[in-house]
Length: 389
Image (cartoon, rainbow, N blue to C red; front, top):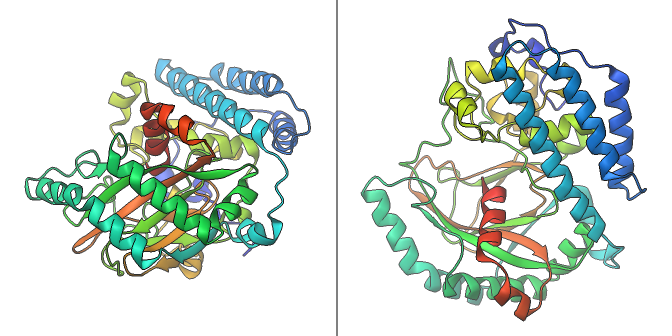
């Protein structure tokens, strides 16, 4: 696949532009791109230098803003970029050279691996989670369909038991070594969410659909790097009840620069209430007209949406490429995928008929049992929500 896996928004009929985009000198974007690549490769580029570069670029764009809402958009985008850069700085500072290359070389290329839990592990987990799943099903009957109503992501003995079972099973299959070798430091399962997906939920449908929806709705990259994850089925899953799909090699073929990628990963994070009221859209959903107005003010070299599955034009060459490389995980309870959600385009949980029960599993830096017991439940909960959103 050639390097044309991103969307040219200027040529997309749903992204018509009224105002001209902000103008930023290409040399500034190229300079940041070079420095950020050095930063990721641990070549001593200072995070403070990168922050200064972001400030300069956004100051230039702010000087061209037409109103207070555009200034708010740029200010929030800038602050979210600086926040995620700080997280990445902490992540890269922990990386060391791991001696697991014979195990993780394939994962490094494919960014995912499929597998199956042992029959004993599946039976135990299903039994442990049954009472909670029954509550989720009752919530569905009552029309309670929010993610909070249909999931549990911490603070219970059941969750801690399942974390231990998964660590034991993944370790016995050599998969903790695979993840550790890939990420650059010793990892283990640090948290998970038990989740029921129902055919009554419509969160994934195109809220602002003007015509037909693309076949790639909800295909996305996760916001956080350094947090590989797994999705484990606790029920049998076929093509109709929300299977996980992934699109190998799409990330590797994105023709984007480093600042463009950072913008794409945080573009859907809207915290300012004035902007929320103006945009009237859900987190990382189809873009509303007002959001498009701001998005298209960005220079074309800075436009990116990590959740671009909604933006793909139906019947386009890009849609055909994505559909052609899509790998769908069909399987019985216990089937799983371990993957780098920030670099593997993926989607799942869009149930047409019936339901899907699954675990959303997060890997993190290996902790001792004492550290696990003392770890802040809120911290793990926040990490889980950032990864599974």
